[in-house]
Image (tube, rainbow, N blue to C red; front, side, top):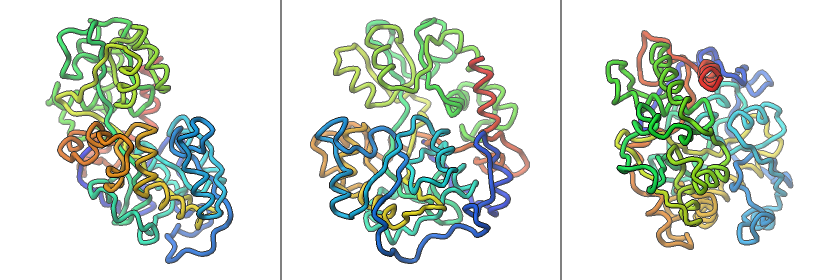
Length: 394
């Protein structure tokens, strides 16, 4: 999550060369020799749709009877939903490459990989009526568009916050310095998000802590800047008690005191507080990274008409509100705020607060073509970040 200027990609071939990732990069043709195209109109629905989603995004009532937006969709459209829940962005990228899925709720650390590899097709937003009510700040961003074309429909957004136990961390922190340069003060009780994209959190801190590095965008790092982020994370590693990707584990760690400070999501903070743990979450003065998820359509979709019906359904005001409350995020549809069961939900998650989100740098896949506009410099890509992350944790 970030605020930035939209980059114009020069050509399909050029981006594919630039975007060397752990998942690989193929031709931008959907695998059939032809560039993927958005449909001009929809046809008859195919009777089913195969979805890859984050947990909580395609609920059918089996986890919580009150959380079911799958069965109403099936009844309305006749499209049976087959959902594969993915735990990481890397898993989503790998699954999309199989060609067995029609749509995916991809985060910004996966979207450019899917575009460059030809696994995602551009989306005709005119065929998704509810797109018109998506917050303008989520449209035509570097992580969900290219050459003026949207490659998906925005779903929701949130910030990666700093959470701490108020009884263990004093004074109250207002800077990421608490988990980087000052991490030793809580040795063994610091927690961090377990993903190569976490390198951007270190880069974000270094933007202000060490301006001589010249970092302008935490996802656009040349080798020297990446090395500085790696060095900082290696220093932090000595104080880290646990790297998390399962939010339930983070709740347990903060509740029990194994973790006292680290990166989190607003929903985790809310749930941890609900379990009577003395925690608080803040957006530090340096800003934060974050996520903006996008529903993308496979270039090889066998059920594209049902996929488009799903895209429109999942971002419709009432359903988008239900998902946002269940998952714990800001909805993408501005009309969803009038549909939440909790009238304060959108205020808590800053749904319409663009000044807040201007301080959030949304996850964007790092590529060799520097996303900060530098022309004479080669930046590091996701494959390099993946190797660096292994080095940090090694």
